[in-house]
Image (cartoon, rainbow, N blue to C red; front, side, top):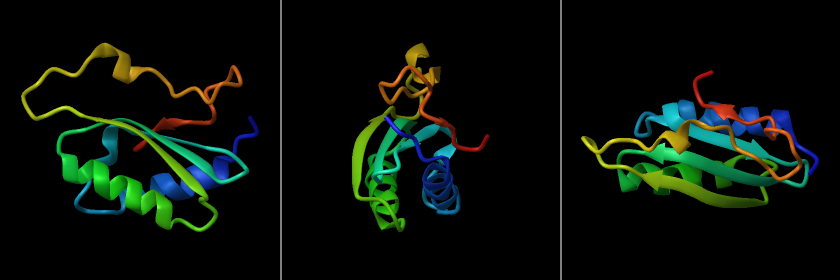
Length: 100
């Protein structure tokens, strides 16, 4: 797939700027066609819902796939959440953890 680092950066920036979301562990991948995938985890369901709505509000986003898990405070985070997000083209899709 043809990735779009600028769109990924815009979505990531908007997530990081929203005070009701801890976007530290949300990963964003985006394509030039405006397809965005959100992955990783948050601690509260409301953060998950807000993250999807924020991503949809970014200019150029046509579709959002929500792969964010809710892992409640105090529950251990599975190791697989630390891997990069793959868009299926053999690269990491230009994705990185928010906050990098």
